[in-house]
Image (cartoon, rainbow, N blue to C red; front, side):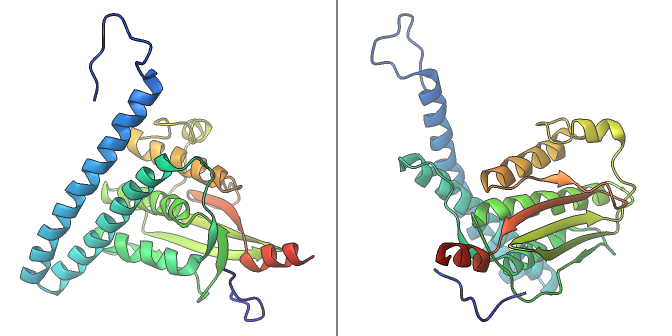
Length: 249
């Protein structure tokens, strides 16, 4: 999938009579959310220290699970840090850069595999490298949410035994396809799938709606692939080489 000819380039109290300097409700809510992100990040750091202790005391399987949990906590802490950093920027545009999509997919699989029921498989792309242009944290959250959703259904007894992640080139675009071998989505679920909290169970439907918003923030869209059985999602990303050639032209 890589092309050697095209290297990667690089809280608050309410006053009865608000004063003129009282911040708007939106600013108060934003401040609260940022304070919350800061404190969640600190709590995650403490949890990481506890996991390090458990990792030393556990056997091989325990160490593998602890290592995966460490990776999740590190990602969550990074998202909190990104939220805090974004609040300080005047430019709110998505920060896109070139990164290896295959490496990111394998990281997600390593994190989620220990949480899957016995016999469940995560099938990965055969490619060894694929450089795309997007916000890496956004793409991590898209793939993580979709794979986590399939595993969550399987853990609750759903008829899903495998989730497949595949990629292919379509001209200058890289198409990402995530599907499972389950019975698929009922029509009633499909109609409201990408609305917050309405795609089945509230937590999972919420995650799918978030995934679509993240895809749109990166110039793509997340859609259902009705051509295959099971639940299947597709989104596209620009390849770095294609972007470089467009700039040279």
